Length: 333
Image (tube, rainbow, N blue to C red; front, side, top):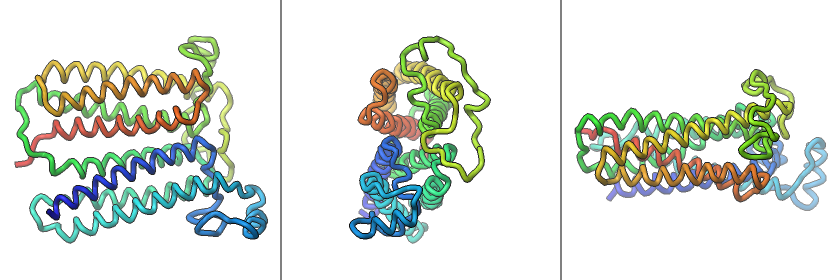
């Protein structure tokens, strides 16, 4: 029973982390990332200033006057992230106290706790370093990693049935891991595209600014560190650098789409049925939806619902690849 409760707590954490990631995308896309110019509070408060407090807040931060809507979006995101941190802390404490029990995972909950603490630091730096792209991208990847690890922890008690031991089945492990790496890499590219405000650098599809290969500046596009003391809100790159980022993200999407189609075909060819095949089918569905959402973002000029869904489906795709790798792992003795 205790083991079941641990699993349920991990699953609750995964769902909450998915919500935090999705809300974070909404905060970022609605330009509310600096809705509160300080951290962890908002204009020195634990909530958003109201009434007579607004004048004092504006005096303290004259460069960023209070916009209640943006500030509340940012604070709700912080409240949820804080709740997630407490849940992960509870998982780590429970795991440590039961570390001598058989099959009790200990290392993963502790890794999760360290990751959540680092995520909090990234959240602080996102604000205090004024939306520095490398920090925004790292914060996004950390959020995805948190969701995936909590999901992995929730899946762990389900590892019961023995796996086939054929060489073809074993070979799937490498290809599934490569698929996960490619999806994470494409997610990082997506985060870099968003953080540098390059999502609409190419307003047409399949061409970019009516050209198949427009002028691009790859050297400037992928400079990770540009120093501190400047605001990156709205982006600081010129057109050619943003186009280079956008086109790279498009090409990455093509590579991931082709690879995951091939991976699903290989799974279907090797396995007659079972959870691995079902997971591969869901993966195939998700990648088609994800590419369609990416195209819709361009054609319809980044509508909020589509852009947030694009982030959410990316998280689901990471979870699906993690699940595929989970099912393909050798069972412990």
